[in-house]
Amino acid sequence: MKSSHHFSLQDHNSFNVKAISPTIYFPKTVADLVQLPDLSDKIFYILGDGSNTLFVDYHAPVIIKPDFRGITITETPDSYIVCVGAAENWHHLVCLCIEQGIYGLENLALIPGSVGAAPVQNIGAYGLELSTFCTQVKWFEFSIKKITVLNNKACNFSYRDSIFKQTLHNKGIITEVVFSFPKAWQANVSYAGLSDFSDTPSPKKIMDRVISLREAKLPNPHTLPNAGSFFKNPIVNEQQLKVLKHSYPKIPFYPQGYGLVKLAAGWLIEQAGLKGYRDKGVGVHENQALVLVNYDSEQGEDIVTLARYVQQQVLTKFDVLISPEVRMITTKGEKSFIDLAIYSESK
Ligand SMILES: Cc1cc2nc3c(=O)[nH]c(=O)nc-3n(C[C@H](O)[C@H](O)[C@H](O)COP(=O)(O)OP(=O)(O)OC[C@H]3O[C@@H](n4cnc5c(N)ncnc54)[C@H](O)[C@@H]3O)c2cc1C
Image (cartoon, rainbow, N blue to C red; front, side, top):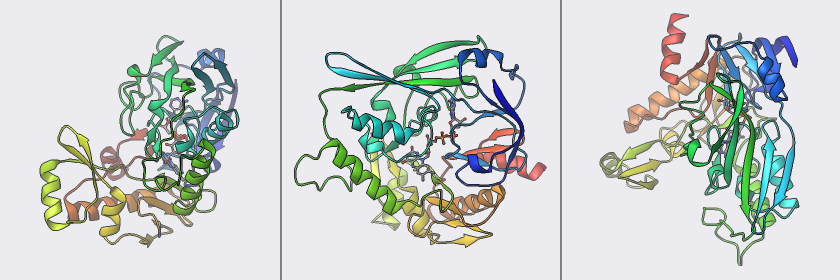
C-alpha cells in the first residue's frame, strides 16, 4: 500500500492551512485496509478531499486517505443502481449521472469533496439530501477487518448527521457508496432559486441553475480558501423562537416538526454585524456570512479564533449557540468545539 512520511497536507484541505502528517496511508483495496497497522489505541484521522476539515495544529495526526476508485452502473426495470468508490469526486459523479441519463442528484451539483465523505454528514443542498438516494454504504470495520454493508436505515441519516459521525466515528472506513435512482424522475424545484422555471425543467437545466447559483453565492476554495458553511443551522424549540420573534420579527425559521424549528445561522451572523468582518488574515465572507474564509493565514488556529468570536457574538445577541459543521483536527486527533477550548488552554 502506498504511504508517505512527513506529508504536507496544505494542498489537501480547502482552508489551505499548513499542516504536516507524520505518516499518511493510501489504502485502495480491502487487502490494503487489512494490512493497516493496528490503530485502535492510536490517534488518526480519515481524510477525504479535506473540504470539511480544519487542521488546527501544524502537527496533524496519522492520516488514512482512502483511494477506492470506480463507478459501476446496473439497471433494473425501474431504477439505476450506481456503486461508487469512496475516493471518487462527488461533483464528477453528479455530472456523470446526468450525462448517462440517470437523474436525481442534480440539486447536489458542485458540492466539493469525495463520495466517501458524503454519507458522513449526509450532504445536502437546494432541498435535497444524499439520504434520499443512498441505499447502502460499504464499510470496512477495523475491529473485524471486514467489509459490512449498512442499509439506508442503519446509517441513521439526519440533518448534516449520520451514524458515521456518531457511534461509528473512527471505527472504520467507508469504501463504497451505493445509490438507487428511480427511472421515473421528478423535478425537485421547491427550494428558493429553483422555483421560477416557466415549465418543468430538465435535470440538466436544474443542475446548471444550481451551479450558477452556487458560483454566485459561494467563494471558490481554489481562489479564496474556505470550507463552505462553517456553522450548522441551529435548531431551537418553539418557545425560544417566540422570544426571538418578539425582538426580531423578520427572523427566518423552518419548522422541523416535534416542536422544533431550524434557524438560519448565516442570518444570525449577518445580524450580529459580522458579514465582511476580518482579522489576522481570516474573515467572514463579504457576501455569505455563513462562510469563514482564509485570506492569507497559514494557521488553522486563526480560523478557530475567528469561529469562537463569531459564536460568542451570536450567543450574546440572540442567546442561540451555533456549532461548527467543519471537523476540527489537532495533533491529538479530532476535537469537538467545546473540547478544543480546553485543549487549546492546556497547550
Ligand atoms: C465551497 C464549499 C461548499 C460546500 N457546500 C456544501 C453543501 O452545499 N452541502 C454540504 O452538505 N456540504 C458542503 N460543503 C462541505 C463539504 O463539501 C462536504 O462536507 C463534503 O462531503 C466533504 O468531503 P471531503 O471528501 O472533502 O471530506 P473531508 O473534509 O476530507 O472529511 C469530512 C469528514 O468525513 C470523514 N471521511 C472522509 N472520507 C471518509 C471515508 N472514506 N470513510 C469514513 N469517513 C470519511 C472524515 O473523517 C471527516 O470526518 C461545502 C464545502 C465547500 C468548501
